[in-house]
Amino acid sequence: MKNKYALILLIELLSLKSFSQTDSSNELFRKLAKMEYDNLKTLYADCIIHPCYGDSLFFKTWLDGLENEMKNDFLKASECYKKAILIPRFELSTYEVGYSLGRVEIQLGNIKGGTRILKKYLSDADNDLNDEDAPWGLSEDLVKEIKLKIKYANELIMLYKKSP
Image (tube, rainbow, N blue to C red; front, side, top):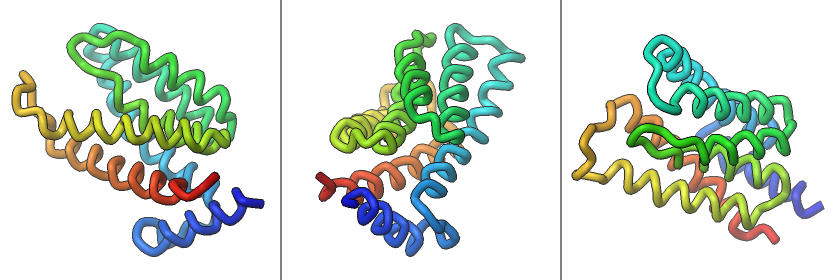
């Protein structure tokens, strides 16, 4: 019953600013996963054409998680995300998967764990956006994507902050 009220609040909160046509929280989570999936498919395709150390496996594992999440198989999605985070990449982090993992942990009912993971994601994303010493810069599109995920992660954290 408590989750039902949290879901209703989530719908109302996000429909006001971000999702004018969202009619259920399941749809909201599916929409967030689909957005991420569409962006990742392009990155994965590029990795197949121009392989980089660990990237193709990383993106494929993350995509598998998103596919499972969109099918509401949150346990398998969580397993994929946890595997993706551990895949070594050449000079690149894997923190981005924390956004997906936090979201799916909330869907599994692990509210504290999910929000903790989202907070870690926010910290890592902030470091990524503001790292002036990084040997490479972020593309304008990537900056927009990270900022959008930051927005949604913050909204989820705020929504579930008062949940038991």
